Length: 312
Image (spheres, rainbow, N blue to C red):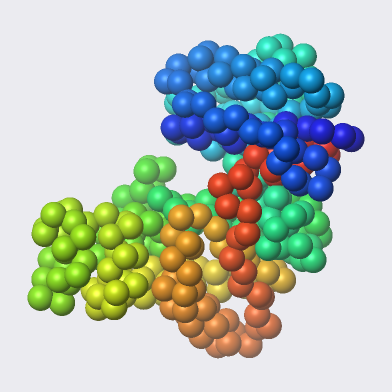
């Protein structure tokens, strides 16, 4: 198959691109995400038609946040995009563009791109974790995406790690992403700054001088300047992240973990405590380890993976 189009549908923006068989993005377009379901479909259709001008495009892959049915046609639920429920997205976009369309979970699409063209090249058994506001995830085994019976496998952020713990946006309590995500990083930093303001001078200075004014980027900036409270917040989420990865290794035995998302861009600030916790827990179980890799493809991973999955 020749050229395909990948579309990454986010809560604030729609990013679409024409992608060749080598995973190279030849052209792209970005538009704001409308607030109404019908308007979202129209915006996607417009973006695809724009990219099809003077090109022979053979198929379209859509990466959408939420639960995607196993038939790769319907968004069963997405809280982030127009509160979709049983949205027939494939059929809508096929009608608007006249092209074959597949729909995939956005984390699955990004993971597929990393395995095919990015950090996971050479690995057939990979767990990809997107550490951002929450924790997204995807599983590749024997070179194939694991979708599960209903199409919604690979949601490790909603494993319960603390019974009756912190409330999660999914409606449950104690989910992993409440302890090992960007939101958790900010919460840990605020809690520590409130208790030890004298130790958080650099961190507090990046905000408005109060713990409530601390934001995620402030924690990273302060940690790079050696602020002890900011560094401790990274240690906190790294500990939770590494322990969770060791649990996933016990279940799935991957050859590699690929870490992406905004928090992973902090580099060694996150990787060092994560690796320490992961290796400590893994060694106790006498298990061989997996490589821990940082994602390479950045914000275009979702559209690249969606475009490649349209070939499958």
